[in-house]
Image 1 (cartoon, rainbow, N blue to C red):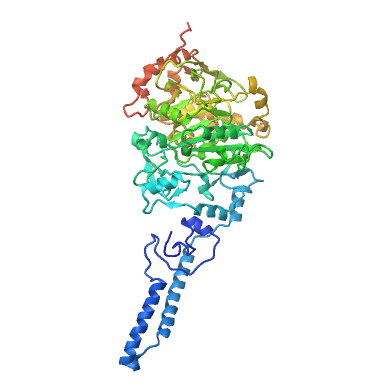
Image 2 (cartoon, rainbow, N blue to C red):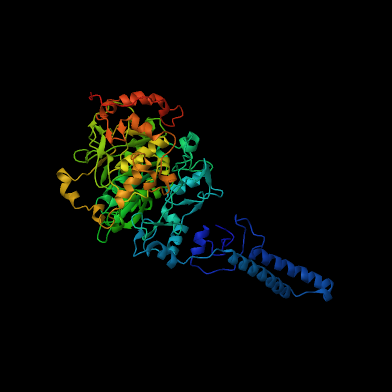
Length: 628
């Protein structure tokens, strides 16, 4: 703030700091003392100083009058003359400042842009971008408690303000280049609510006539079609507390308990979503470093994922009351939903530079201190490119309700897949996965496949392997798409040694509860035929339909949603026994994975700098041990 009376960007009262808020503030213009943009002392003297000058001038006039009455000057006339000159200078400066201001977009236009497209087809929710507040109200909320970290603010002040829930801003303008991509500087806390008016318009992938408003990606992929260096990887990931220079990007120097976590949840008309969010915050050891982003696909009458289970007035200690500022919700009319790939694509758009990225289903319950546990497991791999992922165990009998701790000693591991047919064509589908006591101890265990229901990684995994926007009505095949693309970019997949959350399946005691939840397939007739085209694209990108000419599937934005060049896709198929020509797999791969042989044989090939396993040194090709 400009302690000299006004904010220099617009001559409003000194209650606002950001230029955007300055433009939105609904207060009267003032003719005020202007300082420079850094808040330095203005050249114009204060009113007190002017009075002193006037008094001194009067005394001097009297002395001069007594010596030479003919040269006396009325001090009041001089004061008026000077005041007129000063007023003229001020008015000139005021006009120049007003002329320099950008055009102001009215809040009505902003609301129209975000919410009025084709009958409110996409709404950025109350806890997301817009709710009942207009742009002016949002600006007023931001003005309170802000700290400009670009000015002379000590780390202690930053930490104290952070702990008190104040929003730290000012570092967002700083960027850093990774390869050919310039990525934003990390900051914390962060929210898409900071980006009102900076969204982009996109066309619905199954019906281009529908225009949608969506947050922009935080960054383009940074892998640049080659293996990232560790230095480059360390540029991505925020720390809860900045270093002595005010930087939230601290890399390995950020303490484990201060590393931020982004949690992405895609929910389709799921009443259990807010219970999942409640579990995430209430059972985290450090909930202040967690940010949850929900893609909430609902219709009128459905439970909202960002609304507390009970009234906050009666029960203020609920997570959605205490940590509502750490929940971003992208709310969408359910009739626009075209599958989990579509929804999770928007989830990836909500990522904002957190140190870790986690993906979860909307009906999951977490264990006590899950955040500390999963980070310790992640770091135990010593693999910067590690992605911990699995099909979750059923919640029934899995958590001690008194302590919140896991009662399981077993864990699933991803190793079982096979081809299946259908209207969309032949594709790989993960089957039931074996669950048992881990054979590898002290670290997650290497596995070949990735699962969508639970994934935990460094934040750059979300940046480098975003969900493909052009795959509507895809359900099966989603996991092979992300998994294979990630493999070619250099990522390795691991089964967690310990489960930190459990899934509510529609079976057993929860069958009736889950049976009430709708599925996106209720929109299948509306978007008939789009899934087949999407599957052709999915299989074409990962090289799983070599019999189909490249000209017969969509290549839109393949540079963003395509393969990497760290590893060749054929290496994946050969290593894990997948025949893309004859559409079959070498069965019993779990014999090689579950007993720890894959882990013990491949982990010695982990690069010394921890940047993934060097598959150029892998010569192994799995064959069914029971085939003749």
